[in-house]
Image (cartoon, rainbow, N blue to C red; front, side):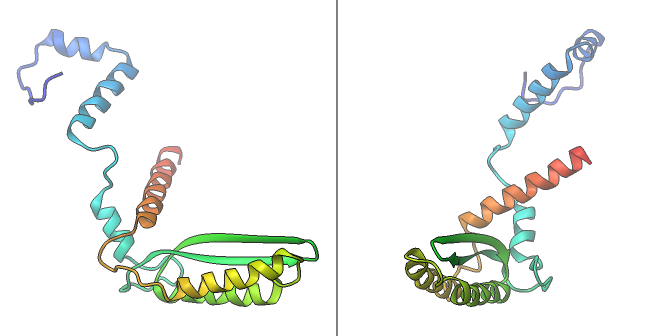
Length: 162
């Protein structure tokens, strides 16, 4: 394989490529593509549209979206379950989710022994910390990059299977 663009193909060379097995052609094309493009590099235009685009929750543009975590705990007698969830949100929607999670924890987290009494204050504190956490509005976080990769992969898979 050469790196130069050719315009002097012979009929025999064209016939050889035409008669090659499909998977060999796919492999050669992928190899050539990787020589010129980093497979781990994300499309910058897609990332910018996710970072500066509209919030997936409220649809309002103008504020920088970021991955927001919220923490919940609920208990019932001897059973306690706590979770951490992440969503791409604008700061306003992120704070609302944290506030809702704090109310949920305060209402349903205390009822288990012993973990409900331990985890409820911890999850409420985690939500408070997340609500007021400062984020860099210029550069995307590693979490946002990972979420964007997953989102782009899902979009591509939807196009292929759809």
